[in-house]
Length: 188
Image 1 (tube, helix red, strand yellow):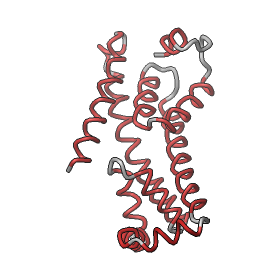
Image 2: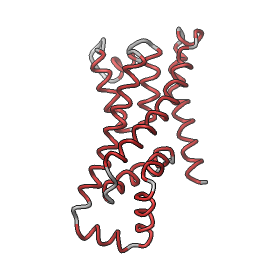
Image 3: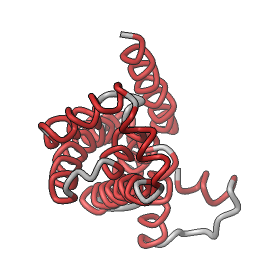
Image 4: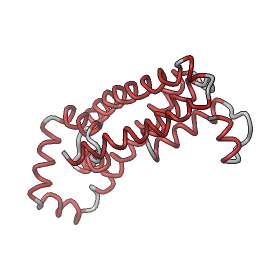
């Protein structure tokens, strides 16, 4: 993977560990699942330590979630938007549910595909306490990230795959698998 990154993307050869960490964090802002898969395979390839890869993913995902919360807080400053949302019956129900059990609901939002962006933004807009929000986000992110990371890491560390070029086929297969799970669960 490191060779492909340097050849195909014209990155400088021998990426340093800090450059890999920053790349994982930035990738997590675009596609969280791809960042987890890439970090796990880079760790299995020994380009970065597993703990550092996991930390980079965690930082990227958590800061992205804080950004969504912050966007909601900024949106709350627009009086017309607040008025329209609070006038809407459905939004009043969402607000009541988020405020009633914020830890549980925010943690569930992390695991339900398609709800993260709107759910975390509405958490900021509706004034959910930041510490409740962060507690739920950190716990849910830790569970999700650890589960996916260690499954992919274990697959990438299998001895017959570790020396083969086929190890990197795991990435698109895992991404396709996660994508299909997300699509299936959205329909249900």
